[in-house]
Image 1 (tube, rainbow, N blue to C red):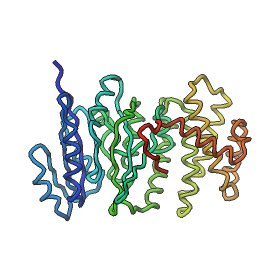
Image 2 (cartoon, rainbow, N blue to C red):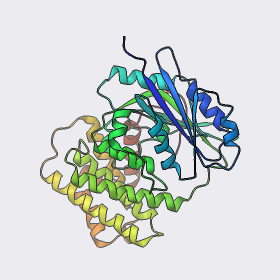
Image 3 (cartoon, helix red, strand yellow):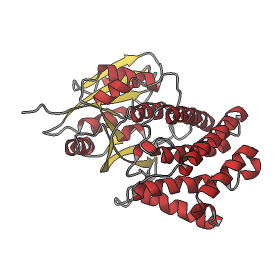
Image 4 (cartoon, one colour):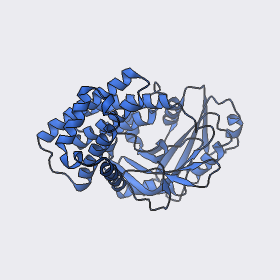
Length: 366
């Protein structure tokens, strides 16, 4: 008889004493007759009543207190203590919905080749009863990872073997540390599945509703630089290079605009956009190759996204970037010749078809 699978749920906490018991309870409630769960709370030097609260959580919870080192370091501390077959991360102010982890593990059981299973996330705002569904793409996750982070960190359940191979979270990053971690997993060839019925609840409240947008955009740009290197250096990442370069081009063009407060980084993003389009042109002229309908839709979506982003920007773009936009229009005339309103509608339609259906009746987040 095989041993019961064990999931290690790592909960970093900094000054979330009042909310911590709910997060821990939602993790412990994931235990079933066929699934064991260990909960590891890492107190990252809280100055509130977190130590006292931790004392009430019971003997089933591993509590580790350390000096304040940041979110990445706290997660790493939890990983070092983890004993599970799978690793999960839950922030102290968020919650797991019922039966989430059992559903994730079931997907692994039905697809033993998978390394990671992702679920959906709903956002609940403080004082509001409306839940907003975060969109989640339904396939080709490695290609989409060239554009942006796929899902919040607490949506992932990952085999511990892959976690150990990928290494720890980068403590030098003050944002996007989870994106960086998942990129390393994808670079190792992680095979990803999805649990469409699984939900995590992201609670948006006073302490986490304000954030430094400029810092976030800057770290997003750092991730785009990382992706560019991975696309260039890793032959197998992603599984579709053309789709990957198109997704990356769209990300860099968006970052060019939002990084306007930092000219050097904005110029860097614009340069990476140009380089990405050159790779696209080389691949298209060499033959696009056979592919499935969903992957064709992904490619078309990112082409349309690039052209849509470029519309209000072209007068501000460098000549090389303007030429890159013209190249995309020439390479993909069925998209490049569309009127702006039609292009916008097509982009939205493609994205909806790339994502899981909103079958739970929740409104998507913008």
